[in-house]
Length: 111
Image (tube, rainbow, N blue to C red; front, side):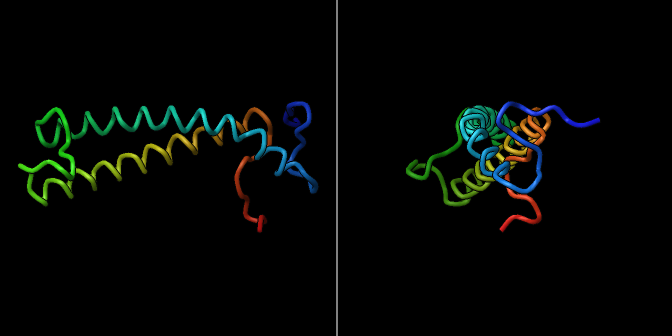
């Protein structure tokens, strides 16, 4: 059974479908990215409280914190933000593809 497509968006046949899909996906992806940032921030705070038993992670300019704690906090924050962003972006692209029948990102045959 063929997939339903939104008006103006075609399946992955040769032509301009990937370009149109990427343009249509941009505002959707922007919203998904903002939501991902909020989720990542909350996840990092929760993880940091569990690891360090402190309400806030140290900042690089905190005078009373040592280098290892500053660097560890930054590494955990980067890992959490990266993982959450990848998961949210992938979920958004998958949802968009299910709705439109077109993958919004690169495919194997794309340059």
